[in-house]
Length: 334
Image (cartoon, rainbow, N blue to C red; front, top):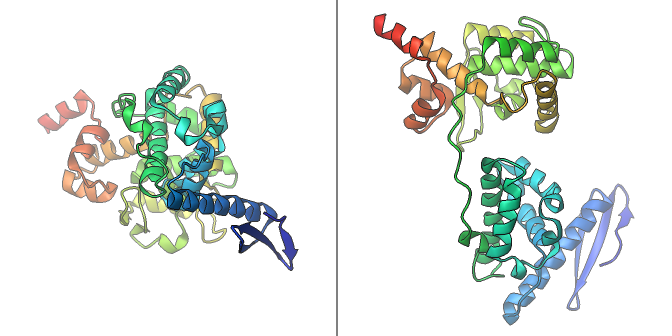
């Protein structure tokens, strides 16, 4: 593999393998080197498959190839990219071992050690991702006969959260962000506070709010071209939601100036600052919004599902609608 060569505003790199040359042009040196490493892995893999030989790709190299070919194109690429960035921290020496040396016994020990550090839900999600990486090695690259993760029991998936954010907690969160109801946001923390209120009004997910562009906003709804369940959704706007939208300054097509990471960092730092870390999740706003839509707007469940984008009514009823017994008692007497 030659060093990248600068040509004009771009960089070019050449990879030689078995007497053949492979070239690529990228915007930066780093992108050239990354492409070359992945190309060599691909060529070596093809050779190994044709000769029925084992290729000793490391766990990390396999993960990098999975991300380049599959993970980077998925809706959940942010989580996969984060896992790749912290891979050596999570796996230590195992990250550089051959994929043929990653055994169920080693995975079981890793799982048990990891459970001492994080919640079962986190370990379960990570194991599902790593299992997908090895399934890719089995079914697409033909490097392995079996996925070792398929032989290891995953932690039990935790029960869905059914927590409502209290009024006092809402006030504390907004105070920590320096934001208040009816305020025009202008600081990065203000936009997080605004999104927090907007989520409780519309039942939109955090990522959906971050990705809103002004092209998506119509008179009575916001059009979401792609959502978590893989389809588009139109979110109807209440009078209150329209008032909230009118507060946001027009600083370009993107509604709020945050990406997933900058928003997450501000949100998590504020929770630690106000003493609610581990107690409140941003996604809890969805529970609040849905419960309010039923209690205050009296929306029937089939209409509610259209608002929230749920394809399964049972999930909507049993997970997200969280009335208090007193709320149900008042409905019975109404």
